[in-house]
Each structure stands twice: as C-alpha cells, then as structure tokens.
Image (cartoon, rainbow, N blue to C red):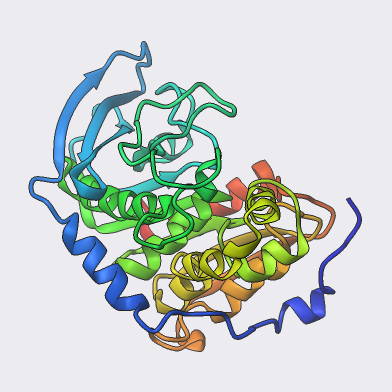
Length: 331
C-alpha cells in the first residue's frame, strides 16, 4: 500500500474538532456505575500450562452488567512480592486463545492479565471463551455494527466497560501493586486501552499501537478496510441510518477518551495503515491529555513507521514498549 493519508508534517499537527456528545461524561459515568458490582472477581483457578518459569490462572471477572468475562492472569513463578501489572486487550476478532501464547510481559517481570473479548475469537488465533449475552441487538453480522443504532445498545459500550472492569480485577488479584497498572493493546486492543486511560484516572501508563475507533467519522469516510468496512457496508444497505450510526460512534471515539486521559502514553503508527489510518491515530495522540492536565503537561511518545501497514513496528515496537515501561514502573 502506498502512502494515502496526510503527509507526516500535517499529521504531527493534526488536531481536528471531533464530534463529542454533550452527555459523553454522564453516559460513561452511568454506564460504569451500573456495572460496578462487588466483588469484581468471580472465579480464579490455577491453569496447567507445563511451563516452569511462569504461573497462570484462569480468571473470570464481572464485566458489563455483571456478565462473566474470562482472562489469563500470568506472573513470574516463585515471586511473592507485589508486582506492577499490565492489562492487555486484544485485536478485532481474536479471543484470549491459549495461556502460553503471550508471555513477554510475565517474562519481563510483570503480572499480566489478558482480557478475553466478549463474543469474539472466531476470525483468527485460538478462539475465545466469553459469550456476549446481548448479541441479539440490532445490527450487522460483525460486532462493530452490533447495536450501532443506539449508544446504549452498542457492542462497544459493553466491551469498553469490560476493559475498565479488567483494571479493577487485576488490582484485586493477589501479588499485584494496584498503584502500578498499565494498559496495552494494538488495533482494537489499542482503542480499548485508550478508552480505559480516559475512564480510569489513576492508570500508571498506556501503550497503544494503531488504535481502532479513533476519529471514527473520518475513518469511515477514507477507508473501506475491515473493520471500518463493516460500518460502510451497513450504511450502504441502511442508508437512512447514517446520523444514528455517527452519533453512536461518537460515544466510543478514542479522541474523546484521549482528551480525558492523563497517564504517560507510548504510541506506534504505520503510515501505510489503511485499517486504522494514521490521521485517526494522530488525532487521538495530538489531543491526548488536553482536557485532563493539558497536552503539554502529559508525557507522550510516538514512534512512526513510514513503510509499514497495520503491523507497525512489530517486534521492534514491542522492544521499545518494554524499555519505555521499565523506565516508568520497573518490576
């Protein structure tokens, strides 16, 4: 894919006015309060992985509406001291898979909670284990358009709430330092982590790459790539629904969450990315912290990969994340 979005000089200054509902804060405060059930942990049981250097638990916590959400909790074996924790969110269509698949954070000395994505896991990877009890809401076959006619019915209202509850869950697990919790994710996972940063005021750090659901109004205008392509196809059939769809999407736009975030942030972006176009990522990055402490008062770092698509910096970017996070909350 050739370069198709704004030039890098324009991207670095790109801070557009993004549609924000007047009741954005009230909507999310009411949503989270509704799901603030106690206890957050529903079940924690040891997982047999045949790995000797890490220990893993199969965790179930109460997500949106108290619905059970699964996750893998992994930490270095034989370590009893409270550890900083990394909560990781998954890309679109992926489930939590098998417990031995993602070991980098535990091997770096962190406690690691990998959250399953409700109703996902069938596109690639090794599947998921969390159903979505509200899957019957109106919308197309993909989750990005499920319930898209009303923000209260929208799938991502549920998934973002699950993501916030995952932070509460990891803080309730034994051997975790609750003051040192970071959120991390790529693509959909990056969008979820960004939402968490905007909704959890005491998050210690945020690491995202190619975040989905940022500057959504522009994204659905300039790309047909999945998952935004699902929204485009939906509107190609439901032509009269555009205003309802755009309104619903404004409640989950990562730029609106970014403005409210204050945790130090580390971002990765590929300039040839048609899945999450670079202008949508820079819109969130350039607005980051502007409504919380002021963008200049919040620590921000971005790594640009001019010749990469949605894969971004891959292992190189992961190495940069490890070094960046260690400098801020070393195990």
